Length: 400
Image 1: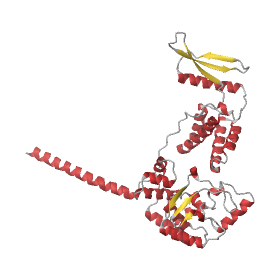
Image 2: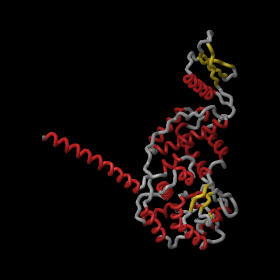
Image 3: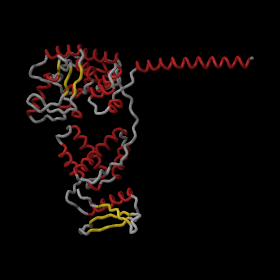
Image 4: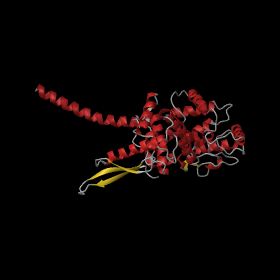
Protein backbone atom coordinates (compact mmCIF):
# COMPACT_ATOMS: atom_id res chain seq x y z
CA UNK A 1 0.00 0.00 0.00
CA UNK A 2 1.34 3.41 -0.97
CA UNK A 3 2.01 5.67 2.00
CA UNK A 4 -0.03 8.86 2.12
CA UNK A 5 2.85 10.74 3.78
CA UNK A 6 6.48 9.80 3.26
CA UNK A 7 9.42 10.65 5.51
CA UNK A 8 12.54 12.08 3.81
CA UNK A 9 15.91 12.53 5.52
CA UNK A 10 17.59 15.44 3.73
CA UNK A 11 21.29 16.21 4.39
CA UNK A 12 22.44 19.77 5.04
CA UNK A 13 24.64 21.67 2.56
CA UNK A 14 27.86 20.79 4.38
CA UNK A 15 26.87 17.13 4.54
CA UNK A 16 27.59 16.97 8.28
CA UNK A 17 23.99 16.89 9.49
CA UNK A 18 20.50 16.20 8.18
CA UNK A 19 16.90 17.17 8.82
CA UNK A 20 13.60 15.44 8.22
CA UNK A 21 11.00 16.46 5.64
CA UNK A 22 7.45 15.23 5.05
CA UNK A 23 6.55 14.50 1.44
CA UNK A 24 2.82 14.25 0.65
CA UNK A 25 0.10 15.17 -1.86
CA UNK A 26 -2.69 17.59 -1.05
CA UNK A 27 -6.35 17.03 -1.94
CA UNK A 28 -5.76 18.58 -5.39
CA UNK A 29 -3.02 16.07 -6.13
CA UNK A 30 -0.13 18.51 -5.87
CA UNK A 31 3.12 17.29 -4.39
CA UNK A 32 4.09 19.06 -1.18
CA UNK A 33 7.02 18.97 1.21
CA UNK A 34 7.27 20.24 4.76
CA UNK A 35 10.51 20.76 6.69
CA UNK A 36 10.36 19.54 10.29
CA UNK A 37 13.55 21.32 11.34
CA UNK A 38 15.04 18.48 13.39
CA UNK A 39 16.71 15.07 13.05
CA UNK A 40 14.77 13.16 15.72
CA UNK A 41 13.48 10.10 13.84
CA UNK A 42 10.98 9.06 16.49
CA UNK A 43 9.47 12.54 16.68
CA UNK A 44 9.42 12.78 12.88
CA UNK A 45 7.58 9.46 12.57
CA UNK A 46 4.89 10.68 14.97
CA UNK A 47 4.50 13.88 12.94
CA UNK A 48 4.23 11.83 9.74
CA UNK A 49 1.51 9.63 11.22
CA UNK A 50 -0.38 12.67 12.51
CA UNK A 51 -0.33 14.40 9.12
CA UNK A 52 -1.48 11.17 7.45
CA UNK A 53 -4.48 11.00 9.79
CA UNK A 54 -5.38 14.61 9.11
CA UNK A 55 -5.23 14.08 5.36
CA UNK A 56 -7.40 10.97 5.60
CA UNK A 57 -10.04 12.88 7.56
CA UNK A 58 -10.19 15.53 4.82
CA UNK A 59 -10.19 13.16 1.85
CA UNK A 60 -11.95 9.91 0.98
CA UNK A 61 -9.57 7.52 -0.75
CA UNK A 62 -10.29 4.30 -2.56
CA UNK A 63 -10.63 1.58 0.05
CA UNK A 64 -12.20 3.85 2.66
CA UNK A 65 -14.27 1.84 5.16
CA UNK A 66 -16.11 2.56 8.35
CA UNK A 67 -15.26 0.31 11.27
CA UNK A 68 -18.44 -1.73 10.75
CA UNK A 69 -17.45 -2.31 7.11
CA UNK A 70 -13.86 -3.04 8.14
CA UNK A 71 -15.12 -5.62 10.63
CA UNK A 72 -17.30 -7.31 8.03
CA UNK A 73 -14.42 -7.37 5.54
CA UNK A 74 -12.00 -8.78 8.13
CA UNK A 75 -14.40 -11.53 9.21
CA UNK A 76 -15.08 -12.53 5.60
CA UNK A 77 -11.33 -12.80 4.98
CA UNK A 78 -10.66 -14.95 8.06
CA UNK A 79 -13.82 -17.07 8.14
CA UNK A 80 -12.88 -20.72 7.77
CA UNK A 81 -9.31 -20.05 8.96
CA UNK A 82 -10.22 -19.69 12.63
CA UNK A 83 -12.86 -21.25 14.85
CA UNK A 84 -16.37 -19.85 14.75
CA UNK A 85 -16.14 -19.02 18.44
CA UNK A 86 -13.11 -16.83 17.70
CA UNK A 87 -15.08 -15.03 14.99
CA UNK A 88 -17.79 -14.24 17.53
CA UNK A 89 -15.19 -12.84 19.95
CA UNK A 90 -13.75 -10.63 17.19
CA UNK A 91 -17.21 -9.34 16.32
CA UNK A 92 -18.39 -8.60 19.86
CA UNK A 93 -15.12 -6.85 20.81
CA UNK A 94 -15.05 -4.64 17.72
CA UNK A 95 -18.70 -3.65 18.19
CA UNK A 96 -17.91 -2.66 21.76
CA UNK A 97 -14.96 -0.64 20.44
CA UNK A 98 -17.28 1.11 17.93
CA UNK A 99 -19.66 2.05 20.75
CA UNK A 100 -16.78 3.92 22.39
CA UNK A 101 -15.01 5.61 19.45
CA UNK A 102 -17.83 5.78 16.90
CA UNK A 103 -18.21 4.22 13.47
CA UNK A 104 -15.27 6.14 11.99
CA UNK A 105 -12.94 5.31 9.10
CA UNK A 106 -10.70 2.46 10.25
CA UNK A 107 -7.64 4.35 8.94
CA UNK A 108 -8.31 7.21 11.36
CA UNK A 109 -7.95 5.01 14.45
CA UNK A 110 -5.03 6.08 16.63
CA UNK A 111 -3.42 5.34 19.98
CA UNK A 112 -5.81 7.67 21.82
CA UNK A 113 -8.81 5.60 20.71
CA UNK A 114 -7.28 2.49 22.23
CA UNK A 115 -6.60 4.24 25.54
CA UNK A 116 -10.15 5.57 25.63
CA UNK A 117 -11.58 2.10 24.99
CA UNK A 118 -9.41 0.51 27.67
CA UNK A 119 -10.41 3.15 30.21
CA UNK A 120 -14.09 2.69 29.41
CA UNK A 121 -13.77 -1.07 29.99
CA UNK A 122 -12.05 -0.51 33.34
CA UNK A 123 -14.68 2.06 34.35
CA UNK A 124 -17.32 -0.58 33.66
CA UNK A 125 -15.54 -2.83 36.16
CA UNK A 126 -14.25 -5.29 33.57
CA UNK A 127 -11.55 -7.45 35.10
CA UNK A 128 -8.01 -6.52 33.96
CA UNK A 129 -7.65 -9.97 32.39
CA UNK A 130 -10.85 -9.36 30.38
CA UNK A 131 -9.59 -5.96 29.23
CA UNK A 132 -6.26 -7.53 28.24
CA UNK A 133 -8.09 -10.07 26.08
CA UNK A 134 -10.17 -7.37 24.38
CA UNK A 135 -7.10 -5.25 23.61
CA UNK A 136 -5.34 -8.32 22.20
CA UNK A 137 -8.33 -9.00 19.92
CA UNK A 138 -8.34 -5.42 18.59
CA UNK A 139 -4.59 -5.48 18.06
CA UNK A 140 -4.90 -8.69 16.09
CA UNK A 141 -7.65 -7.30 13.85
CA UNK A 142 -5.62 -4.21 12.97
CA UNK A 143 -2.42 -6.24 12.60
CA UNK A 144 -4.16 -8.42 10.01
CA UNK A 145 -5.01 -5.22 8.12
CA UNK A 146 -1.31 -4.29 8.19
CA UNK A 147 -0.33 -7.72 6.87
CA UNK A 148 -2.89 -7.40 4.06
CA UNK A 149 -1.54 -3.97 3.09
CA UNK A 150 -4.68 -2.13 4.19
CA UNK A 151 -2.83 -0.14 6.86
CA UNK A 152 0.72 1.17 7.08
CA UNK A 153 1.03 0.34 10.76
CA UNK A 154 -0.99 -0.99 13.67
CA UNK A 155 -2.56 2.04 15.42
CA UNK A 156 -2.82 0.16 18.73
CA UNK A 157 0.66 -1.38 18.73
CA UNK A 158 1.85 0.74 21.68
CA UNK A 159 -1.23 0.23 23.86
CA UNK A 160 -0.08 -1.27 27.15
CA UNK A 161 -2.36 -3.89 28.57
CA UNK A 162 -3.35 -3.51 32.24
CA UNK A 163 -1.19 -5.50 34.61
CA UNK A 164 -2.90 -8.52 36.10
CA UNK A 165 -1.92 -10.66 39.06
CA UNK A 166 -1.72 -14.34 38.30
CA UNK A 167 -4.68 -16.19 39.76
CA UNK A 168 -4.10 -19.21 41.92
CA UNK A 169 -4.47 -22.44 39.95
CA UNK A 170 -7.16 -24.69 41.36
CA UNK A 171 -6.81 -28.46 41.18
CA UNK A 172 -8.85 -31.19 42.80
CA UNK A 173 -7.29 -33.26 45.57
CA UNK A 174 -7.22 -37.04 45.32
CA UNK A 175 -10.10 -37.24 47.81
CA UNK A 176 -12.17 -34.71 45.82
CA UNK A 177 -11.59 -36.66 42.60
CA UNK A 178 -12.85 -39.81 44.30
CA UNK A 179 -15.94 -37.98 45.56
CA UNK A 180 -16.64 -36.54 42.10
CA UNK A 181 -16.61 -39.98 40.48
CA UNK A 182 -18.75 -41.48 43.25
CA UNK A 183 -21.24 -38.61 42.99
CA UNK A 184 -21.38 -39.03 39.21
CA UNK A 185 -22.19 -42.72 39.62
CA UNK A 186 -24.94 -41.97 42.17
CA UNK A 187 -26.55 -39.39 39.91
CA UNK A 188 -26.25 -41.61 36.84
CA UNK A 189 -29.76 -43.07 37.21
CA UNK A 190 -32.00 -41.75 34.46
CA UNK A 191 -29.13 -39.81 32.82
CA UNK A 192 -27.88 -41.18 29.49
CA UNK A 193 -24.65 -39.20 29.74
CA UNK A 194 -21.91 -41.28 31.42
CA UNK A 195 -20.48 -38.64 33.72
CA UNK A 196 -18.42 -41.12 35.74
CA UNK A 197 -16.45 -42.37 32.72
CA UNK A 198 -16.28 -38.84 31.33
CA UNK A 199 -14.66 -37.47 34.51
CA UNK A 200 -12.22 -40.38 34.77
CA UNK A 201 -11.18 -39.94 31.12
CA UNK A 202 -10.59 -36.23 31.72
CA UNK A 203 -8.43 -36.99 34.78
CA UNK A 204 -6.51 -39.62 32.81
CA UNK A 205 -5.89 -37.70 29.58
CA UNK A 206 -6.07 -33.99 30.46
CA UNK A 207 -8.38 -33.43 27.49
CA UNK A 208 -10.51 -30.32 27.16
CA UNK A 209 -14.30 -30.53 27.35
CA UNK A 210 -14.75 -29.93 23.61
CA UNK A 211 -12.12 -32.56 22.78
CA UNK A 212 -13.82 -35.19 24.93
CA UNK A 213 -17.28 -34.45 23.55
CA UNK A 214 -16.08 -34.64 19.95
CA UNK A 215 -14.07 -37.86 20.00
CA UNK A 216 -15.49 -40.81 18.05
CA UNK A 217 -14.84 -44.49 18.64
CA UNK A 218 -12.34 -44.57 15.78
CA UNK A 219 -10.17 -42.10 17.74
CA UNK A 220 -9.62 -44.65 20.52
CA UNK A 221 -6.79 -47.09 20.03
CA UNK A 222 -7.60 -49.79 22.59
CA UNK A 223 -4.59 -51.90 21.63
CA UNK A 224 -2.02 -49.15 22.25
CA UNK A 225 -4.07 -47.58 25.06
CA UNK A 226 -4.43 -44.04 23.71
CA UNK A 227 -6.82 -41.49 22.22
CA UNK A 228 -5.84 -39.74 18.99
CA UNK A 229 -7.24 -36.21 19.11
CA UNK A 230 -7.99 -34.91 15.61
CA UNK A 231 -10.42 -32.46 13.95
CA UNK A 232 -13.71 -33.65 12.44
CA UNK A 233 -15.09 -32.98 8.97
CA UNK A 234 -18.68 -32.18 8.15
CA UNK A 235 -19.88 -35.60 6.97
CA UNK A 236 -23.14 -37.50 7.04
CA UNK A 237 -22.39 -38.89 10.51
CA UNK A 238 -20.11 -36.21 12.05
CA UNK A 239 -20.25 -32.44 12.33
CA UNK A 240 -17.48 -29.93 11.71
CA UNK A 241 -15.16 -29.45 14.67
CA UNK A 242 -11.74 -27.80 14.77
CA UNK A 243 -8.99 -28.48 17.26
CA UNK A 244 -7.81 -25.59 19.39
CA UNK A 245 -4.51 -24.37 17.89
CA UNK A 246 -4.96 -27.11 15.25
CA UNK A 247 -2.51 -29.39 17.11
CA UNK A 248 -3.18 -33.11 16.65
CA UNK A 249 -1.86 -35.22 19.50
CA UNK A 250 -2.26 -38.51 21.31
CA UNK A 251 -2.98 -38.92 25.03
CA UNK A 252 -2.66 -42.04 27.24
CA UNK A 253 -5.37 -44.25 28.71
CA UNK A 254 -4.96 -46.37 31.83
CA UNK A 255 -6.03 -50.02 31.91
CA UNK A 256 -8.96 -49.16 34.19
CA UNK A 257 -10.32 -46.44 31.89
CA UNK A 258 -9.87 -48.68 28.83
CA UNK A 259 -11.96 -51.35 30.55
CA UNK A 260 -14.74 -48.84 31.31
CA UNK A 261 -14.70 -47.46 27.75
CA UNK A 262 -14.99 -50.95 26.27
CA UNK A 263 -18.03 -51.70 28.43
CA UNK A 264 -19.49 -48.32 27.47
CA UNK A 265 -18.98 -49.09 23.77
CA UNK A 266 -20.93 -52.34 24.08
CA UNK A 267 -23.96 -50.42 25.36
CA UNK A 268 -23.82 -47.81 22.59
CA UNK A 269 -25.79 -47.77 19.33
CA UNK A 270 -23.77 -48.57 16.20
CA UNK A 271 -25.36 -45.58 14.46
CA UNK A 272 -23.80 -43.13 16.93
CA UNK A 273 -20.05 -42.68 16.25
CA UNK A 274 -19.47 -40.36 19.23
CA UNK A 275 -18.13 -41.76 22.49
CA UNK A 276 -19.86 -39.47 24.96
CA UNK A 277 -22.77 -37.86 23.05
CA UNK A 278 -25.90 -39.79 24.17
CA UNK A 279 -27.91 -41.55 21.45
CA UNK A 280 -31.04 -39.41 21.89
CA UNK A 281 -28.97 -36.23 21.76
CA UNK A 282 -27.14 -37.44 18.66
CA UNK A 283 -30.43 -38.14 16.88
CA UNK A 284 -31.68 -34.65 17.80
CA UNK A 285 -28.49 -33.04 16.47
CA UNK A 286 -28.80 -34.96 13.21
CA UNK A 287 -32.33 -33.57 12.76
CA UNK A 288 -31.07 -30.04 13.42
CA UNK A 289 -28.28 -30.54 10.87
CA UNK A 290 -30.77 -31.61 8.18
CA UNK A 291 -32.88 -28.52 8.95
CA UNK A 292 -29.83 -26.25 8.75
CA UNK A 293 -30.18 -25.23 12.40
CA UNK A 294 -26.83 -26.61 13.58
CA UNK A 295 -23.67 -24.48 13.71
CA UNK A 296 -20.00 -25.13 14.29
CA UNK A 297 -20.22 -23.13 17.52
CA UNK A 298 -22.84 -25.52 18.93
CA UNK A 299 -20.49 -28.37 18.12
CA UNK A 300 -18.04 -27.08 20.73
CA UNK A 301 -20.37 -28.46 23.42
CA UNK A 302 -22.98 -30.73 21.83
CA UNK A 303 -24.35 -31.90 25.20
CA UNK A 304 -27.08 -29.67 26.63
CA UNK A 305 -27.07 -28.42 30.26
CA UNK A 306 -23.44 -29.47 30.69
CA UNK A 307 -22.52 -26.92 33.37
CA UNK A 308 -25.75 -27.45 35.29
CA UNK A 309 -25.17 -31.19 35.46
CA UNK A 310 -21.54 -30.85 36.52
CA UNK A 311 -22.48 -28.39 39.27
CA UNK A 312 -25.05 -30.89 40.53
CA UNK A 313 -22.28 -33.50 40.73
CA UNK A 314 -20.03 -31.06 42.61
CA UNK A 315 -22.82 -30.33 45.08
CA UNK A 316 -23.41 -34.05 45.59
CA UNK A 317 -19.65 -34.48 46.16
CA UNK A 318 -19.69 -31.61 48.70
CA UNK A 319 -17.16 -29.58 46.66
CA UNK A 320 -17.83 -25.84 46.73
CA UNK A 321 -15.07 -24.55 44.47
CA UNK A 322 -14.10 -25.68 40.99
CA UNK A 323 -15.10 -26.11 37.36
CA UNK A 324 -14.82 -28.88 34.81
CA UNK A 325 -11.63 -27.42 33.30
CA UNK A 326 -9.94 -27.93 36.69
CA UNK A 327 -9.89 -31.66 35.87
CA UNK A 328 -7.47 -30.84 33.05
CA UNK A 329 -5.35 -28.73 35.41
CA UNK A 330 -5.36 -31.58 37.93
CA UNK A 331 -4.18 -34.07 35.32
CA UNK A 332 -1.34 -31.85 34.05
CA UNK A 333 -0.19 -31.11 37.59
CA UNK A 334 -0.18 -34.83 38.43
CA UNK A 335 1.88 -35.58 35.33
CA UNK A 336 4.58 -33.12 36.38
CA UNK A 337 4.58 -34.25 40.03
CA UNK A 338 4.89 -37.90 39.01
CA UNK A 339 7.98 -37.55 36.85
CA UNK A 340 7.05 -36.13 33.44
CA UNK A 341 9.34 -33.34 32.24
CA UNK A 342 8.06 -29.85 31.57
CA UNK A 343 8.41 -30.44 27.82
CA UNK A 344 6.48 -33.70 28.05
CA UNK A 345 3.59 -32.05 29.90
CA UNK A 346 3.51 -29.20 27.38
CA UNK A 347 3.42 -31.66 24.47
CA UNK A 348 0.70 -33.84 25.99
CA UNK A 349 -1.38 -30.76 26.81
CA UNK A 350 -1.18 -29.47 23.24
CA UNK A 351 0.35 -26.12 24.20
CA UNK A 352 2.67 -24.15 21.94
CA UNK A 353 4.90 -23.06 24.83
CA UNK A 354 5.59 -24.17 28.39
CA UNK A 355 4.79 -20.64 29.60
CA UNK A 356 1.10 -21.35 28.93
CA UNK A 357 1.33 -24.68 30.76
CA UNK A 358 3.13 -23.20 33.74
CA UNK A 359 1.05 -20.04 34.07
CA UNK A 360 -2.44 -21.44 33.69
CA UNK A 361 -2.33 -25.15 34.51
CA UNK A 362 0.36 -26.26 36.94
CA UNK A 363 -0.45 -25.91 40.62
CA UNK A 364 1.64 -26.61 43.69
CA UNK A 365 0.22 -29.79 45.20
CA UNK A 366 -0.25 -30.17 48.93
CA UNK A 367 2.22 -33.08 49.10
CA UNK A 368 4.89 -30.86 47.54
CA UNK A 369 4.21 -28.21 50.17
CA UNK A 370 4.52 -30.84 52.87
CA UNK A 371 7.86 -32.05 51.52
CA UNK A 372 9.12 -28.48 51.29
CA UNK A 373 7.94 -27.82 54.83
CA UNK A 374 9.86 -30.85 56.12
CA UNK A 375 13.00 -29.70 54.30
CA UNK A 376 12.67 -26.21 55.80
CA UNK A 377 12.08 -27.63 59.26
CA UNK A 378 15.23 -29.73 59.01
CA UNK A 379 17.27 -26.72 57.94
CA UNK A 380 15.80 -24.34 60.51
CA UNK A 381 16.24 -26.87 63.29
CA UNK A 382 19.96 -26.96 62.64
CA UNK A 383 20.13 -23.16 62.48
CA UNK A 384 18.15 -22.69 65.70
CA UNK A 385 20.29 -25.22 67.56
CA UNK A 386 23.45 -23.42 66.49
CA UNK A 387 22.01 -20.09 67.60
CA UNK A 388 20.86 -21.46 70.93
CA UNK A 389 24.30 -22.99 71.62
CA UNK A 390 25.96 -19.71 70.70
CA UNK A 391 23.59 -17.75 72.93
CA UNK A 392 24.22 -20.10 75.87
CA UNK A 393 27.96 -19.79 75.41
CA UNK A 394 27.66 -15.99 75.41
CA UNK A 395 25.50 -16.00 78.53
CA UNK A 396 27.97 -18.20 80.40
CA UNK A 397 30.83 -15.94 79.38
CA UNK A 398 28.97 -12.93 80.78
CA UNK A 399 28.34 -14.67 84.10
CA UNK A 400 32.01 -15.54 84.49
